[in-house]
Amino acid sequence: MATAALPREPESDDSGGSQTLRAQLRLRELIVNGEITPNVRIPELALVERLGVSRTPVRAALHKLQEEGLLEALPGGGFVVREFGETDIHDAIELRGTLEGLAARLAAERGAGALVMAGLRDCLARIDELLQPQSLDDASFSAYVEQNGRFHRLLAEASGSALVQRQIERAVTLPFASPNGFVLLRASGPHARDTLVVAQQQHHCVVEAIQQREGARAESVMREHARIAHRNLREALQSHQGLQQLPGARLIRRADR
Image (tube, rainbow, N blue to C red; front, side):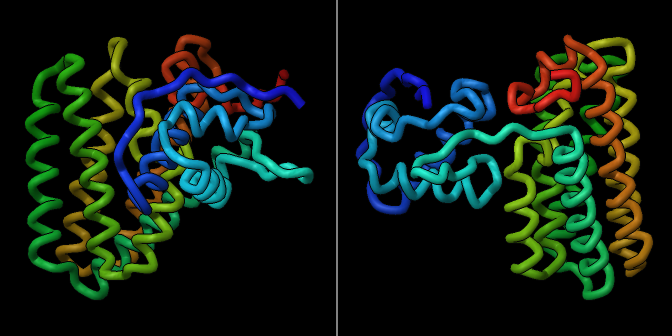
């Protein structure tokens, strides 16, 4: 099977687990950016040279990305990047919505800590301010991405469950399940702001439900919140320009291919 050649990156003096984490994050970035082709055996030695780390952290990173679902192990050894069908992506988004719904329900039923609730309210205030203008520039979208990611991380923390947090962290590592996976598709066009406004309304609703200890409502809002990503995915798949803007688009196995 063919292997992909990879140019070398600067060496790092990181050691131990930090090398594995750095290799894992950089390798995931290469995969999502399409720099490693799906269904082509990943050249381990080329990765060692490119990432500037030894084979041990590279191998550990490959195994971790296999656990995440980005890679598949070959029968004779080695790994390839997976392709994802449209059903796979819908399932990943649905999984995130289900887990975040559970986190919201637990936060409401068990009561979230004052610090995490203050963080969620701060996110709401910052996003409200970003969405005040009728049109958003690149800086506003970048700030929205940052605060939206923070909101979702805090929501997982609000569950009070380390297990739920870990499962959400694992789910969102798939390139299409991230809360920000489709936000950049909305960075242009006459209705660029509209979907973000709807999502922000849902953010407000879930925080209100948590504060009022309404577990079923909080869960329902977050399940509905994931529907926005489903709709954005459908629109992206129908638009060549949309696919060009979508991180990880080269990993999608289209039905007509």
